Image (tube, rainbow, N blue to C red; front, side, top):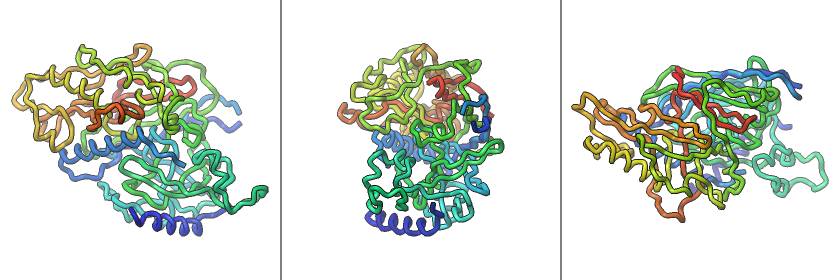
Amino acid sequence: MASLPFIFFLSFFIISTTLTSAGAAAATIKLSLSPFPHPSSSHPHQILNNLVTSSVARAHHLKHPKAKADNTTSSLLRASLFPHSYGGYTISLKFGTPPQTLSFVMDTGSSLSWFPCTSRYLCSQCAFPNVDPAKIPTFAPKLSSSDKLVGCRNPKCSWLFGPDVASRCQDCEPTSENCTQTCPPYLIQYGLGSTAGLLLVENLVFPQKTFKDLLVGCSILSNRQPAGIAGFGRSAVSLPSQLGLKKFSYCLVSRRFDDTGVSSNMLLETGSDSGDAKTPGLSYTPFYRNQVASNPNFKEFYYVTLRKILVGDKHVKVPYSYLVPGSDGNGGTIVDSGSTFTFMERPVFEVVSKEFEKQMGNYRRAREIENISGLSPCFNISGYTSIKFPKLSFQFKGGAKMALPLVNYFPFVGDDKVACLTIVSDNVVSQSSHGGPAIILGSFQQQNYYIEFDMANNRFGWAERSCA
């Protein structure tokens, strides 16, 4: 880590010499989603252990983020969402003039969108399955006529770095309107990964519509990030905010710790408000903003109010302080497509896992698999012709319930003789360490659900579907 600032400086010297300086029609955007491969061995137990580690690291980041820097008729933009296994889901987006196509991990837990940038892009620890770190596709600014570096006094610079960023424009005269100093470089953490680069404004191109001068990151240096990030969080820099989306939705195809070429659709709705009409068949619960959050970055998360967790017919007694944020803003539940397994703080996880242990006491624990995979509890179910698993359900404000399919929380591992609970936690049990969202609903538990983020009506919707 001691060499990072030096590499960081060299990267931005290189990028600075490479980059160039300096009512819309309604549309329906359809994107394809695909699961992203996870860097690991092919052994399923090791794959699970890597996913547990990355899910817990992601939770730590989300809970303790570093500060970082005309009316139209409604219609839909559509694209494919591809599963690449063992992690997130990617979409393909086209930036630049002429457009260059790149893959992005779809992330509702962060806001800045960025792509690997220039031929000098470096990515450490990026040996993902089917990914050659030396051949990661990158955006070439010199091939686009529409890219521009963001100036230090450009209002979009403050979207990421805050209103005080102008004080860092040391090379600008206070009264000058023609300052050529660029916006400061960014460095963003993603649990186990990170990325660093400079901000651009660039065109985002869909078949039906081009969105001009979107703020996007041009990353030169990354760790464990072989693809870019499409930020679908709630801040001004996110794609939903910049595109003026009224809602977006996706359906995550099911995966069983393997690669698949099957994709599903992601829909982005632009244009004027369509009223408060609900999508037929969906259950809804309101979003809320964590206005008293101890960390301002929590305001970009999609919080929902979880009222009850049920294991079978048993309502497990979760401490109230974890279900609802307190006066310090800590606690509560967020929806995050960038986390794989759902995370629960230790006091929440303990009551849930112990209830599963109680109701499945007739099955032998697979302790060795628990030690290898990092998941718990795991049960050895070999020799049984009939197996009964308790239902896992989440009940939200308003009474709507999400009753998970078995494969979303107790998938079979390896040779189908063991089943493990795919909810994770850490070893922190003290109240003093309690901070940020207490429960993070990850993508594995969202598989084969149609998920809708309705920003116009401030609500979260879902319905069980076959996404393939």
